[in-house]
Length: 351
Ligand code: FES
Ligand code: CO
Image 1 (tube, rainbow, N blue to C red):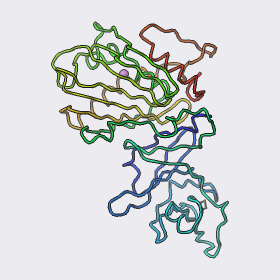
Image 2 (tube, rainbow, N blue to C red; image 1 turned 90 degrees about the vertical axis):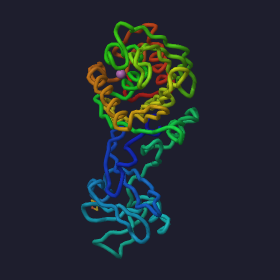
Image 3 (tube, rainbow, N blue to C red; image 1 turned 180 degrees about the vertical axis):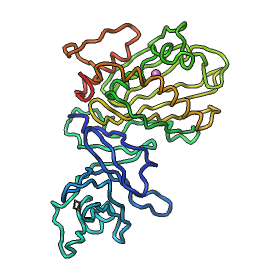
């Protein structure tokens, strides 16, 4: 399954502190824990299966130990200790190996006594996890890493992470909603659109192995930019660099001092449920972080009931699926996105 070979966001980095936390990714329960930091730098994050190999207890109910020989995760049941990177380097065992059994302290646990470990990294304020290494030579190079989102690391821009939003539908439905300009006048009337100005322009849509890019997508908005007093046409650029991620960008222009970039990053929890974040970066927006979050929360609260109502929760991408959907010329981006999922062979959340 290609989904297992992709990087997925699982939790905001600042939610993994000194106690383990859990989440579901692609139906797999994970424990996330962080090694204690040094000299102000945060320690490494680990993502393991949330199940002790001894008797199956949830490791996320355990504790992080700052052991002399490196951080360890202690199981809540019999206190077995599993090594993180530092402990693993010290003991010359793979990360996740059991390094101590308190009830049998002289026992030297063999390699089989180990937690199931996944690759984890941090990007754009989120922890990203990959369940399997890619085994496909045809995997696009861009998917070997979490999606690129330059404005998140640009010191001139301000970055605000919004979410998590847990949503009762498949991740592809949510991506498609993000790419869809033609719902603005109805779902977000008075906020992002008006039904009296419902017409949109889908611009130039390009499809390639690395995803979908659409330039100059235009919609009428009641406020052409944050702080504007009147409506006008707004031009967006969209990119879909990953099956479950999409990035919108609006650059400032003469008469519009604000540039915005919003990345939608989604954790596919199960086939029919997901958790989303908006990584927002802005240049020139005078609202404070809390106002930006409140706006995003309000807009998402408008989307949620409609998106969760869409049936099936899986996105119909094939002509021979159980349900076919029909399209208009305003849906060119969504059609391109559906073809991208089909080309990649994505099976989660599609039908
Ligand atoms: Fe984890 Fe026994 S179940 S130590
Ligand atoms: Co919307």
